[in-house]
Length: 192
Ligand code: ADP
Ligand code: TMP
Ligand code: MG
Ligand code: ZN
Image 1 (cartoon, rainbow, N blue to C red):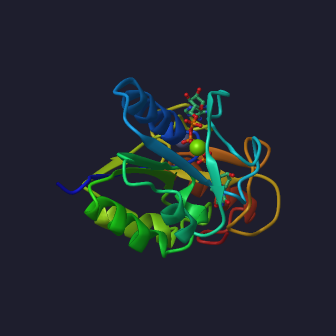
Image 2 (image 1 turned 60 degrees about the horizontal axis):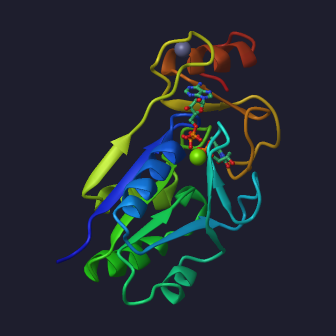
């Protein structure tokens, strides 16, 4: 039987990694053989650690290219977990297809949109392929409502790949995002 693909997505702080860790726990409790991966470029909490914003973590194999996953998969692996998929290239989709065709369940977590609201292509394609998409929300940093679907950059470089946490990004709802953009452009409509 083929495996199932689950994609957990949403803005920063929405609990994507927390949910990924809870699935890892479920598979570990069931004594399943699993493999956990993360992009090597995400060094926020160490090269080989997946960590939540509250500090819970698990060991993971750091990879630079999606193909490196295939080399790590022995015949008895039953599930594969990958965090921060937005940092891996689009070929991850082909690798994941091969895994689910082999009967391996795959759980991926990552951002759907950059702070500029551009979709991350790898996440978008995996969402299209997924059996289940879990779209999470965060608490809006500005208005306090549980409706944040966007990440907003408060500091750092003007690049869409920029590893960081609370010193660089906040989670916001769409109304607050647009208000922040307007304030930044000195109140002129439609400018960023
Ligand atoms: P993600 O991987 O989506 O960034 P994590 O699973 O690492 O999220 O972290 C989720 C945790 O972040 C929450 O359980 C909460 O304790 C904390 N947190 C910090 N800021 C927020 C926020 N604005 N909204 C929701 N949770 C937040
Ligand atoms: P998180 O979703 O687990 O909080 O992690 C998101 C990571 O992605 C974090 O290192 C910051 C980074 N990031 C970007 O590189 N570009 C972006 O546009 C955003 C919003 C986050
Ligand atoms: Mg995370
Ligand atoms: Zn808001």
